[in-house]
Amino acid sequence: MATYSVNHDAVEFVRDLIGKKQYVLDSRWDEVQPDAERQNTYLEHHSWDEYGRWFLGLTEGATDETKGRFAFGVGDFRRVHRSALIACVFRASEWHHKSVELAAHELLQLLDETSGG
Image (cartoon, rainbow, N blue to C red):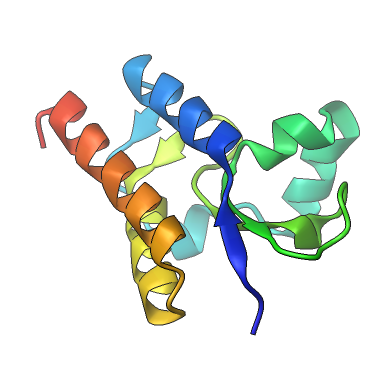
């Protein structure tokens, strides 16, 4: 099984988006998360650093500037989705990636505080 570290650039980016109220509170992540085609389209117009900010996990040992380097997506390349943060908490917990789980949990708490949820 892959191991992951927390993408601290993503954590700061998501904090900033939450502060700017760039989030969706009610969505179904399985329906709105970017598929491979949407990811490729994003990468045609943005850098790998910009792409990576949308993922809370960095895959240990994966080659930089590949999709495989990034895991635990949190948004649709425009806004953070509460459902994505919840999915990150559950997936990271299920796979025993405690640092990613805690980062996602903290961001979820911040989002709920900010949105009045």
